[in-house]
Amino acid sequence: MRVILLASLLTPVLAMAQTESQPACPTLARADFTTAVENREPTNTVSQVPVSTAELFFYTEVHDGSHQTLYHHWSLNGEPFVDVTLEIGSDFWRTWSSKTLTGLGMKAGDTWSVSVTGAPGCELGHWQVTLTESGNAPAAPDTSTQGTPDRTAPPPPSPSQTQSPANADGAQQAAPTDSAPVDLSANFMAIEELLTLGDTRGARSAIKRARALTGNAQQLAELDQMDKDNQAFAELNQLIRQRDIPAARQKLQALMVSVPPESPVYPALQGRHKLLDQLNEMNRDSAALQAAAAP
Image (cartoon, rainbow, N blue to C red; front, top):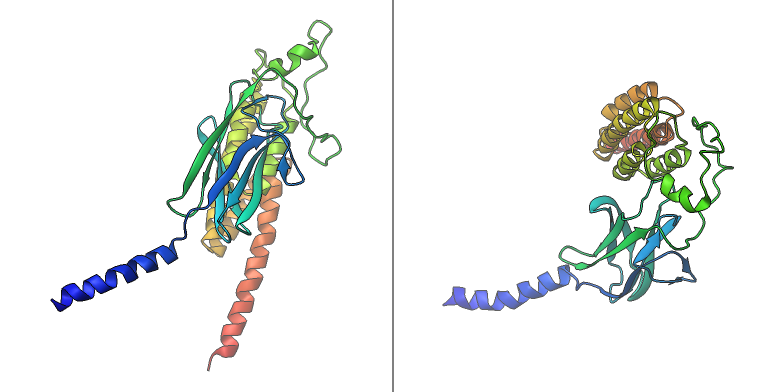
């Protein structure tokens, strides 16, 4: 009898503790794709955008989620692309994530989708936008002045090969039938940006899309090697997350030798070199403190 009574008394206490440890899911008052955000508000809401769109945003207005975390899970054509973590600052909070599309070789019919989640068990919804041929989009930013390595560009087209503006976008989507090299500088810039952010999964998708744009054997071989270097970079990141500094430094040294300086992977390796130096310094400081505190 006492056991039954004790269990009945503990049940509401345990339920209350569980409720306190798992806050209620926030409410999404608004959630939409947009092509721009101004003054913390979307300028439009879209379910379709032209392939020439330079950047895509996903905007959310969250209620009753103060100090919780929101996640935007971006996918391209159903494949996970990047996860964005957003902190909710108050019970009325507007926040958004974005994806630069320039250089990814997008084509009509491609779909971007975002799933929004919160704490474990909080599935807040799924939204999708489709790329189309028609319509106007914000112009892509001018990247001609940025310091990126020169890439092999195709020879100037003959008058018979020159395309009208109406057909230019469509012509860029399919790989050429001959073996002439194509200009992949925008693609390489996007890959470098993704790797600088540590997004190896997104970089791999960008590499695959760059491969679809060229039939040149040399460029294909370069992209294949870039994909292997990207996978090795992902392994390096894993070692760093595990705080296996000796193994990470050994792998980094090997990659710094094997990866050419003009590769989009190389700047990311330089960033990891600085990070490992900082971690080494932190480890030395920690060891010194422990030695000083030892009896």
